[in-house]
Amino acid sequence: MRALEDHLGVSLFERDRTGVRVTNAGARFLQQAREALAQLDQASKRAGAAGRGADGQLRIGIVSSMGAGFLRELIQAYSERHPDVAIQIVEGASSEHISLVRKRRLDVAFLADASDATDCDVAPLWNERLFVVLPQGHPLCDRKAVEWQALRNEHFIIRQSNCSRTLCDRLIRHLSDRNHTPSLQKADIRRETVMHRVAMGKGVSLTSEVTVATTFPEIIFPSDFRR
Figure 1 (cartoon, rainbow, N blue to C red):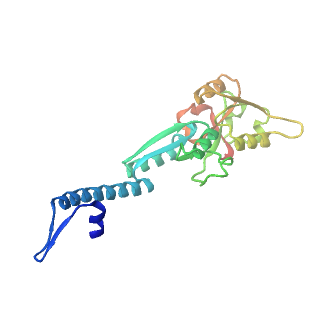
Figure 2: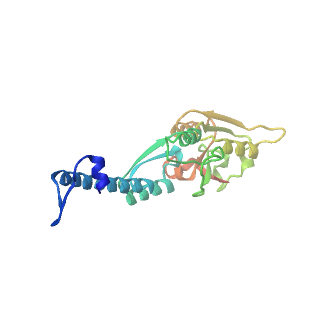
């Protein structure tokens, strides 16, 4: 205590034979020290809560086609469990999200294909069936399941943001051989526009299981593929 008084250049306590009394300077110092310690304790608690994901802001990247079903329920459950966390949703292509995660501008991203995120922490969460979108009256509409080979000669319209390397590679691998290359059009358009182009007979497309209930159910049929 004397070392502290020497450092401050003031006496915090008066000492005599009857005991020790706090000086005016000491009372002021103790009051502000208590306030500082309380602020430090609060800062420590807030930092711990932020580190546990219970406070602060959470920036989540999603592909628009995944914004329903399991993912919606997951985000809603997290929001209810951590009401003090402000959630920011960012839509975009998988490659954009991976880049933003690397730059620490996103905290987490939900992707259908994380093969390009080799330097990030990746964990599988759920599986979905992949559906092929067909126009009304298409010969394959009567089938309950559509095999890849049945789509071999179809013209595919795929959204640019959904055509990840793994998905496109698998599609090409399933539908091509030495004498045949599938017709694949990558379009920078919205999902609804893709569905309308399919309905107009301009080609076929692929969509995830969670979108079936919200887009043209009469023209969507399952294939034998899980993502």
